[in-house]
Length: 216
Image (cartoon, rainbow, N blue to C red; front, side, top):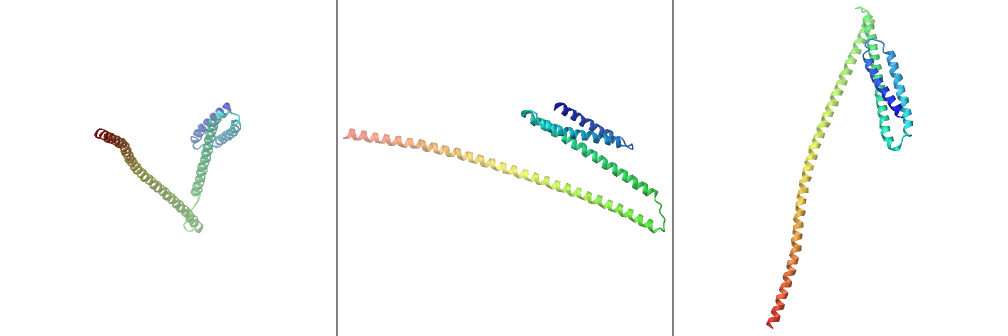
């Protein structure tokens, strides 16, 4: 299992380096490198599945640590898959923009052509819709930022409230501690006074008995 883990981990690192090469291709053909990355990702996925099977053959005391390492490999593999999909999406958008640009540059417009006016209005409407979509997205991001700021402000207020409550509880605890000390002193004094009272009664009885004996 250890050899397969290290092999898969090395494959993950090599695939991450392939992404660096993919970003540097520029105007070249990224197709072969994309296929290589996809093949590496498939291999990593297959190795993770094999590692899941081999995991239950490990000793119990090592199983938890081994599972954490396998989960990390799966997490890295998911990031690689997401990165490849994002690159493919950006590549498709660039190709689509290039095709639209070439189509727009190759199109001829005349002043008295109804079809050309229609095409022009369609292009303007599309640009206007795109601009409005960007504005809506910008407003949505601003709303999210304001909402996050409000949540942070509420958390700060709650933190101040909790600090005040903690101070009040601490003061109450100190007051209760002082009261308990005072009550213990009172109880101790009452206990001592009881012995003083009993001793005084005994002394008084002895004195009365001596007076009676010597005077009669």
